[in-house]
Amino acid sequence: MSTTVKRVYGYLAEFESASALYKAAEKVRDAGFRKWDCFTPYPVHGLDHAMGVKRSILPYFVFFGGLTGFLTALVLAYTTQVVIYPTVVQAKPANIFTVPAFFPIMFELTVLFSGFTTLFGLLGLCQLPRLNHPLFASKQFHRVTDDGFFIAIEARDPKFSAEATKGLLDEIGGKNIELVEDDNK
Amino acid sequence: MGHHVTSKDIPVDGEHLDRSKVAGIMRICLIIAVVGTIGAFAIMLGGDKESQFVGSVTYSWLFAFFYFLTIAMGGCFWTLLHNVSNSGWGTSVRRTMENVGFVFPFMFVFALPLLFPQVQHWLYEWMTMHKAAAAHAPEGMGLKDALHHSGDPHDHLLYNKFFYLNQPMWYLRFFLFFGALGFTIWVQRKWSIAQDTDPNPTTALLFKQRWHASWGIPIVAVTITFAAIDWVMGLDYKWFSTMFGVYVFAGSALNSMAVIILVTIFLRRKGYLKNVVGPEHDHIMGKLAFAFTIFWAYVTFSQFFLIWYANITEETSYFLLRNTSNWNTLSIGLVALHFFVPFLMLLRSDVKKSNKFMIFMASYLLVLHMVDVYHMVIPERGPSVTSIASHGKDIHLWVNVSAAWLYDLVAFVVIGSGFLFFLLRNITSAALYPHRDPRILESANLHN
Image 1 (cartoon, one colour):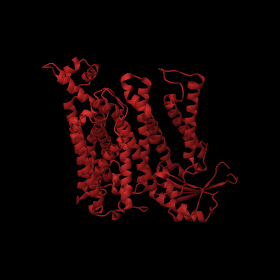
Image 2 (cartoon, helix red, strand yellow):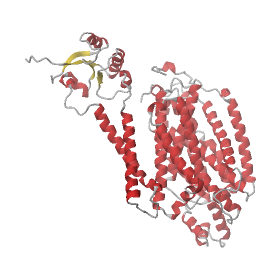
Image 3 (cartoon, chains in turn purple, red):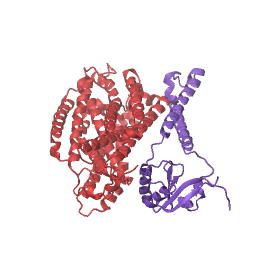
Image 4 (tube, chains in turn brown, purple):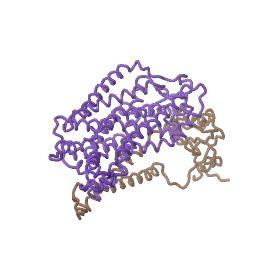
């Protein structure tokens, strides 16, 4: 038996179905919690609305990522093909009217930079990759990739209380309510 | 909307827009369309064969006719696509798609002038050349051989294209377009409406529509492509582009969606469709409009880019005309206003759910589609009409007719009134949404 004091991660509760989880999520949202999340084996339509999740800031990153790609391609192609080394193809002008020839490059780099910003922006906002998550300490949580629907309310939420939060989860239909402790410390 | 829609929210007999409520608009539209069409027919069919004015009017008519034809064909496309892809999201707007598509058979009325030699004389040079070759052919020689043996080197091109560009086939295709696609959209809409009064609604009619939409899709694709080739690309028989059909299709699908968005918004403003169409549908339709804005740009640029880059004489004639003089301003304007502006404006997801914004955006797209069709048809007018009127002695980029653009506008209003009349006729002749479709609740409670 270890005597180390472990940090409490929060409460984990299981729900019977996606619709039970959906309705429970609305109640947790209305109770005013901020640091909590739903875990399901598959995407549930409208769950973000039920959870009261605000729109992600990611689209703005992607817009400026795409714009960067667009301008990079324009400057790259224009500088090399028109300014530094004018390339004359089939007597076409090497000036601003050559720009249609650069459209494919501009298109591709816009898509590429948008794609990269989406991927890395998403990973950054989700704080991924990470090696472990405190919820992995829970045995029942393993079923989340199979048939388990869970809500976890974190202890660092200002509204969290050892008694009342457990009562709330119980009241909204949560089963197997478990206090998850952080294994790491 | 806003709450979970159940079968209690769907009226047993569906929602209907009573015809008496739009009788005034319909009457005005009908009067404008009938008077305008008779006037235009009189000018085009009875006018002087060497008058630049008459020639200008034929181009105005073709421009306006083709504009509204693309929108109707797009409506057929959306109906068939919705059915063949077994979609659940759009069941509540499907009837609107059918109503826009079902204007297509009625467009036959406005296509009639194209059948007459007086009009073909101005629009389709190849037909005139066929007639000249036939007239000069030695006795007993067929038209195809006559083109082969003619002294004019251009006739040899027509000899090679004879399998497609010949008058019997052209007339046959003309009737096939209206017959085949007209029948397809008629039968789809018929089954859809039959379900409205089915006392024991099942999935039978739904599956029937889906199954039969599978052959409807090739018909709509072939009709849009070859109607564009016969009526617009045929204005310059020397030019060809395999991208042209796709280009016209992109504009059709985009602007037909714009009309569908406008119709569903106006119906909701008048208090209809409220239970079954909401912001989620607006969002999806906005996304489709956004996607086709990009598709239009992609296809249009692909057509231009390959021709511009390859620079092969017989392919460049289309752009030689449109990328010089004032037409170049219009071409560049289209790139900016038909792509960059709507692309950036439709980028945000919340604006697609705003009805006010989408009314503006859909109207904007429809205006730009008008410019796009203008850019397809009208540049051909100056050289063709001045050449025909002066027997090839005095060819100009612009017709010598004061305010020729005014005839374009009048033709647009006349055929537009006809389009609106037939659209309102369709909307008022059946329930506003398929209220007995098994998936109407799925569609009403849409989440995306």
